[in-house]
Structures are given as structure tokens and as C-alpha cells.
Length: 392
Image (cartoon, rainbow, N blue to C red; front, side, top):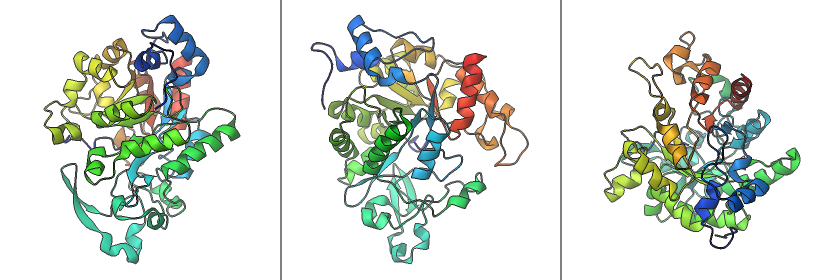
């Protein structure tokens, strides 16, 4: 997931005959009250016995790029720690493509800020400037490297000013491929004796498709190969581009989630196709009904759930949770972080950029809105906050 505002400018069917795939997936979707939303009896029984989204705890703790509050993001060190800290789902990972067509896990196609590529003189000439979703961006891009070349790089902390302690681990882990993540998921499921869930995202799919490196087909091929393309497979797919989710909807049966940036933002695929709608249009009841036709959830920025005033303090929650639940969509907002700069103003303590504020208080405020889960860089904090909320 991007911060997640990077785009603001912007199968095999197992369901009974005659039962629509989306209605069945709705069987696994719980409302904030814990009631199953809009389900026929046979579908409800199917979901109860076969898992799916219904099997996830509520509110669901989603390890944002792993445990990126403690380790460089999108590394097996980060993913592993997220599970150790109690995450129900690990966002492994943000999927981009190499020159030779492999899916790898990086925050963005540009890897200057998340790897040690700048320290590799053999790749100095690869530094270039490209237009990424309308923004001129200078650095090194995954599509200019083969997988073998990327494997010579090592991950580094993306925001060292906020997380200087994470720089201890710079250089320790390589860039994982999505295929490696799928194998890791199986290994961890066996070792831990419980199903491990992942939540990959297609990053800048329109950008990559124009380069002849379509993401969705590659994702679907790997999921099918691993038998993880079913409605109850423990792989939730997400994207900021609704057309990417619509394309995935034709390729696989996995749970699908549309990510939503700021209200004024436009998905980049809308910009490219001339669709005038903004995120504000997508979160109306009509927009949510449309999304529910091809997806099972939304991943809104937390500000779409509870806006902030000019001073950065939380105001009155919007109707988004109620409206989304009314059409059977789950809400997994992003991103809760413990450090002061990322918290609403009233939950900050002191002025240090890397000091923790009252994250527990912020979690309680967001959980109280009825969201179904949350992306967080600090899964351990979220697990404790959930226990406080559920038992309070």
C-alpha cells in the first residue's frame, strides 16, 4: 500500500450452481455488529464451514507492509515479525514488475528510497526520470532491472527520520518475489498451525500495463498455480485502481478490495480514461453499490472515516461505515502508526518525530466507528488496542 495517497492525482468456481460468486463472497462479510450481512441460508452455511473473510477476527489487524514500524518494509524480516506480533493478515506485498516479468514486493516501482541501489556503481547509469501517474519521478525503477539484478540489492528503511531504529536492519534482507511470498505463506501456516493470510496490492497497474507488463494476469497465474485463486483462499487482493480490481474479478475468485485515497483524489485509471469521478463520488451510496458489484471491501484512508479539522484533530465520523456495510462491503482503512507525526493532533505527545503518541487512544477512536479492521505498522499495539476495545 502506498502512503497510501500515491494515486491521488488520480478462475475456478466452487460455489453451488446458480449462486453468484459475489453473493457467496458476501456470506463471509460481517457487519460491525457481528451479524452476517445479506445472506441466503445455503451461502451462510458454506461460509461458516469453509472459512473465507468470515474467519478473520474483528476488528482485523493487518500488518501494513509487514511490521514496518520495526523493520524495513516488504522484507521477510518485516512479514515474519508481523505474524510474531499477532497480525491476522500481512500485507505482503505491494506488487511491481521486473524487466523480465517477475512480480516483486516493493512500495513503489522506484526503489531508490527502499533499497541500497544507490550504493551499487554498476547500476548508476540506470538512474533516470520517468512520469509515474502524472508525477515526474527520478530514481531507479524495477522495470529496468532483471530479477537476478534486483536480488543483488538489499532493503533499507524508507523513513529513517521517523524510524532511525529500523536502520539497524538496513542491508539484511533482499527483495522478495510474490512467488516466494506464496511459499512463505504455506511454510508459516504449517509452522504456526493456523492459516496465515496475505493482502497483496497491485501497484500502478495502468503504468505497468502501458509498458507491456500487466500485473493482474501475472498475479492470477501465480495464484492459480498455488491453488489460491478461490473465494475462500487466504489471499485478499487490493488496488487503488478500480479497473484493476474489475480485471482481477474476471480472472480469480479471491476477495477483492478497492483502495480509496483522499476525497478529492482521482484514481489514476480514471485520469487515463477520462472518467471524471473522484474518490468522493466512489464513497457515495451509489458509488459503494457499484463497487459492491465487483469487490467485497474498501480500503479507505482513515480520514474518509473520521475527518480531521484544520488543526489535525478528529471531528465527527462520516456515514461511510454505515453506507458501506449497507451494501455488504467490509472496511479496512489505512494506516495507523504509533509515531507522533502520523497521529491526529490531540493524540500526540511531545514534538519528537520518532516518539510515540497516544496510539491506544487513536485506535479506540477508530474502532468505535465500526470499521472491520485496520492497516497498521505496529501490529502488537493494534492487538492490545483491540483487546481493550472488545473487552472494554
